[in-house]
Image 1 (tube, one colour):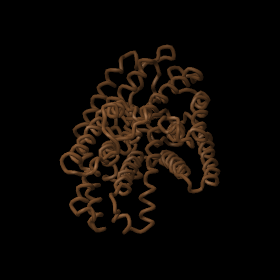
Image 2 (spheres, one colour):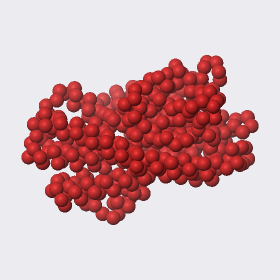
Image 3 (cartoon, helix red, strand yellow):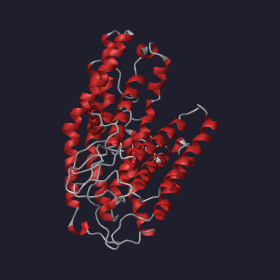
Image 4 (cartoon, one colour):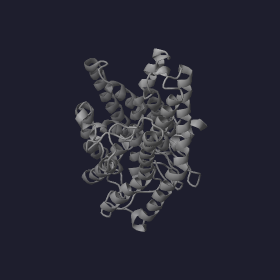
Length: 433
């Protein structure tokens, strides 16, 4: 969930794409690094969509804005939660990019996960603190409703601080933060699986960290298809990454195809499997749940990123300044918006005696959106940006001389040009996604 996918300054070509057809993701050696602009735009759009969804769908009773709106508007806003699938696919894409030069060893696993913890946890902890503060303000000072259900306990807070709330069965303190738990699980699975693939099927090329295509498929495809056909429909698996592994895998295979690690026909075959499953799940479930919508959005996201790369539009599509700004700070609004919105909406409803008119309700919801973006900007500037710098420093520490010349027998640190790996976050290290 992080911000810009930035290419390392010293790289002449990303992932060794052949010059013909032209590599849409290449940059000239010595030039300024660039970001995956289209991916950043998708990330910003998805984060904004999720914020709007929570503002609209958690409008307090008597729901004047909702009831005064056209049914198509209501339907569209209530479906916006599917934007989470966009972020999961982006996360898989960026992690695959980040691992492309990584020789996996116990040391690299430590640094790989450590950098992500340093990057993601400070804004997350600040959000937990803000939620608790809002609860105190609402219940003990202003006589408003709490932003979460159930009592606040040390055990519940501790579970959230350690990303274990869903696994331990605690109800979430805020909307959306469950994905951070899933992201951290995915990082562990991704780096371990990449290491296994390196060992069971290395490429017959000296110092080539990318496994062979059959090694990747042997390790990742069975788990991805198990997620698609078995784990995903089972709600009991929702606290674990296996429930969402298919979405992450779509992003990973998209990058592998763009950098020619995986042939295009395999990407097409995997997308075709997803489409076939979509056809049968729609026939079986109809509108009983939203899984068919989730899978449609995930498949569309993967195909869109692939098309942007192959058509040399990665730096062109969605290159709008406001959207790129949202993409850069997207982790912060994703985290902080819910307590901010709850505070403003609860206070606004009380100001109008709990019965605002539709126009007044719309104004309150718009104020909640603007306040969320403003709060996110401050979190990004004063919490997330320093955390990104700390993670960048860890990366420099990890890049010892030995790690810059890895061999199949001496596995060390990842290569230059790492990008932040979380689908909804941002960053500007020398860095990340």
